[in-house]
Image (tube, rainbow, N blue to C red):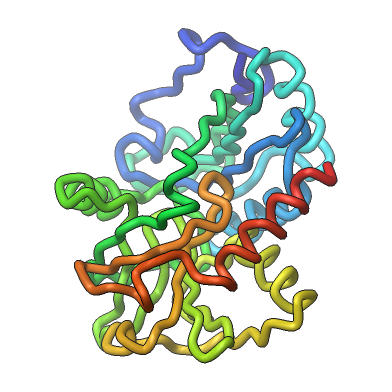
Length: 274
């Protein structure tokens, strides 16, 4: 079951107009979270970010925060998944002229089953590739994933699981669906500007500080990869996923590092608390 505008509907009936701005212009926002033990992780923070994205793009969210919380919790109960992914979506609505925003936004919460990545991704690490791309509204989680869809297809051909975006000056930004961290000399460094500030990213920064691992939010250059002792990406569905190769370049020893392993462990302890 899914929630669309003001009703619960089946997958077959979860449809919107072809004249909706999300369809004809790719205009809209969303947020994405998962459950652990059938409880949503960081629900409040995800909804806050949804409203921030709406503010960035001038989209009206037709529900209050408490209403959205209630819908998500009810949807988790209505669906019989072992664990659940909830996507909260708000579009520009049906446009009168095909480009103007409509204050009557389309609102949906879509529920699907959560699946886990192979354990080997966390014990042996993964490969990612890079491409130059700067998002127009980096602080908004928009529906515009045109570049992401294309470059992830390229990544799959190279047996990579993510694509790292670089700006025009070859600064590392973020992944298509993740944030990026590097470990250099025992310090955790993560890009600060030109990125979507992930909820998982914030959790990892907090955990690192509790572990007395210095955290620096600063520019990272692609040319500095050879200096990285470790690297990992973070996302709601990926958690803390260690990266051992970027574009064929070995990161550190080419194996999952100590700090990455500690943060993987601490993150999983955090979700067990739910």
